[in-house]
Each structure stands twice: as structure tokens, then as C-alpha cells.
Amino acid sequence: MSKIALITGITGQDGSYLAEFLLNKGYEVHGIKRRTSLFNTDRIDHLYQDPHEKHRRFFLHHGDMTDSSSLIRIIQNVQPDEIYNLAAQSHVGVSFEEPEYTGNADGLGTLRILEAIRLLGLAKKTRFYQASTSELYGKVQEIPQSETTPFYPRSPYAVAKMYAYWMTVNYREAYDMYACNGILFNHESPLRGETFVTRKITRALARISLGLQNTLYLGNLDSLRDWGHAKDYVEMQWMMLQQDTPEDFVIATGVQHSVREFVDRAARHVGIELRWEGQGADEVGIVADVGLEPRVNIGDVIVAVDPRYYRPTEVETLLGNPAKAKAKLGWVPKVTFEQLVAEMITRDLADARKDSLVRKHGFPVFERQE
Ligand code: NDP
Ligand code: GDR
Image (cartoon, rainbow, N blue to C red; front, side, top):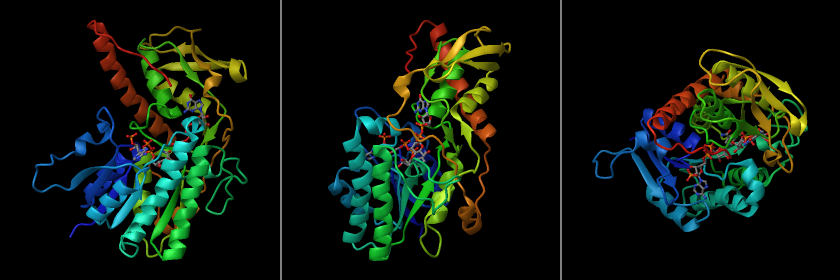
């Protein structure tokens, strides 16, 4: 009998990679998607199986993290061996604009799943993974951060995730549930949402290099992050549920780069060398040298700071210590920073080329940047 997994947030970056990973392991995979007025399944369309097919292993259910009844119904019907709770309003900046909703979906939403497992009598059967985050460290108390570093959340998102973290620990201790937190540092991929900084950068630089966009506007260029590849990280989400006893793990690369360094690296991939001038809100990235293809000129300002992207409270520096995951799960990240940037910008260049063709043939191409 194949194992049954239920993934909340299956339409997101991690949900897509995890669903693919579990299907390859022979699992029957169920996912919760919320109702939207347009299709929101782009990232998992390649996994979709027609509901009329007889031997399906991939199923989608309508539900919402803010709606207990839908979560209870789905968990009761699916009777999962493993639940991966990935659904969240996951944008830190947006959480300042929607703090109550973020608390509801990310904090209480986690409690709703844990309660459903308990009330349905599944506490001994169903293993639970919580998508915890390096944002818990916030105003960091120690560098690098490990499982024992104290938390100091700096956004409504991080505070909601802290509630979810401790609820997971509490249900493990109170009801002897197999429940664990993966404290994952930033992980990216070509499937990353376009409003997170890495994807925003690779997408914009690809478009700038083809003359489809003029300027990339960013917030804090000095932020330091420990960036890994989502594909590497979902494997660890699964590994955490395969141990004899449930434990919490930090997943990180142990290498840190600034936002500015990410921009430099991505620009080089499209043949642009940048020089930086000015400071703070006045800083700009100017084309210092240019290869054959890019449709920019030396001296063009292609990166500028827009303070609208600053956050009321910033997390300045995150650097993870993955020693425990290495020792107990045998984990080392496979994809390097350089490979990650290269993969992302290559995919965004391919998309930008398609848009370029569309424009060339007289059809409109709309530009947006958030
Ligand atoms: P994404 O933002 O790409 O995906 C979030 C998923 O949650 C989407 O499927 C989204 O649906 C769904 N969702 C949002 N709100 C609700 C709701 N109210 N009810 C049901 N589903 C909802 O995030 P990632 O894949 O990058 O991250 C996965 C999880 O890991 C998140 O919980 C995130 O906070 C956490 N995390 C992520 C890290 C990272 O660097 N990526 C690092 C550490 C933790 P829709 O597609 O309709 O928007
Ligand atoms: P983060 O990711 O907040 O770390 O949360 P994000 O990519 O949004 O920001 C990283 C850093 O870049 C700075 N920054 C900008 N960020 C965005 N989004 N847009 C900009 O224009 C911009 N300019 C500079 C930010 O201020 C920040 O310092 C991600 C999410 O996936 C969370 O869900 C997850 O928990 C954490 O990673 C770990």
C-alpha cells in the first residue's frame, strides 16, 4: 500500500516541488488549494490527473487555512499518513499590510490542522510537518543561527509563524503526536513567486537585457540572506517525517550573500557588469560594462532604490547553521548560490524572449513590478 500525503499550499513553490518528489517516491498525493477567480495551479499543472482517470495518485481539494470545516472534512476523507503544512500568506512585506489575515492563516491555520488531527483520532497515525522559518530569528541574537538560537520575530508574518512553531511543539508534547518544525532559511527556484527579491531580480534583469524593462526598483540592498534551492529543501521536509522520533531542524546552506551581491551575480549572467554609486535610498546600479546581447548602454542606471520596498522593521542578517541536519539526516545542500542564480535567470530569460517575440509581432506585453 502506498503512503498517503496531504500538502497544504500545494500550488506554491515548495508545494509543487514536494508533490513531485512524493509522487516519485510512490506516494498518493493530496493537495489543498483555495478557490480563486482564475486558475492558480500553474506550478502543478504538469502533475494534474483528470478526475475521470481510474488509477489516479494526485488529487486536489478545495479548502482554506482560515476555514476549519474544510480542513476537517479533507483530513477525515483523506486519512493521511503525513501532512505537510506549507500553506501561508508567506510574504513578509505584505504581512505588515495584512497582519490580521496573516495571523489567521499562518498562525491559527496551523492550530486548525493540529486540532483536526487530534479530534479525528489521527494523533497516532498522521505525522505532521510545519513550515517554520528563519524569520523567527528576526533581530538576530547569535550568528550563525541554530535550533537553540533564541527567537525575536520582526514582522506580523514571523509572529504568526512563532505561534505555529510553538503549537507544533506543544501538540508533540501534549498529545504525543509526531509533529516537527523545519526551520528553513530562504530557498528559491525558477518557481519562486515574482515578488520575492530573488525572482524579482532575475526576472527584471532578464527583461532589461532584452529591452523590455528599463529599471529594477528594490528596497534594502544590504540585507544578508542564506539562499538555497527549494528542490534541495523539500527533500528535507520529507526526511524529517521519516525519523524514529520527531525533532525540529534548521535547514540552510551556511553561506550568506547580500541582495546587492545577488543583483551583481544575476547581471553578470546576462552580460552586464554593474557599478554601484550613492548610498541608502540614493544608491543606484549603473551599467559599467556590457557584452554583445544586452540592449543597454554603458552609463545607464538600471537599478534604483525605492523606499516603498523598505519594511517597518527589517531582518538585516540571516545565516543558518545546518550542522544538526547534516549529522542526523545526512544532509548537505547540492545546489550552490552560483548555480541557483544561473538556473533562475536562464528560465527568466527564456520567458522574456517569448514576450519579446510577442511584442515584435505587434501584441501588447504588460509590465509590472511589485
Ligand atoms: P508560496 O507563497 O509560494 O506558497 C504558499 C502557498 O500557500 C500557496 O499554495 C498559496 O495558495 C497557499 N495559501 C496561502 N494562503 C492560503 C489560505 N488561506 N488557505 C489555503 N492556502 C493558502 O510559499 P513557499 O512555497 O515559498 O513556502 C512554503 C511555506 O514555507 C510557507 O508556509 C512559507 O511561509 C514557508 N517558508 C518558506 C521559505 C522560503 O524561502 N520559500 C522559508 C521558510 C519558510 P495560492 O497559490 O492560491 O496563493
Ligand atoms: P524574506 O524574502 O523576507 O527573507 O522572506 P524576500 O525575498 O521578500 O526579502 C529578502 C530580503 O530582500 C530585501 N529586499 C526586497 N524584498 C522584496 N520582496 N522586494 C524588494 O524589492 C526588495 N528589496 C530588498 C527584503 O527587505 C529582505 O531583507 C522569505 C519568504 O519566503 C518567507 O515566507 C520565508 O519565511 C523567509 O524567506 C525565510
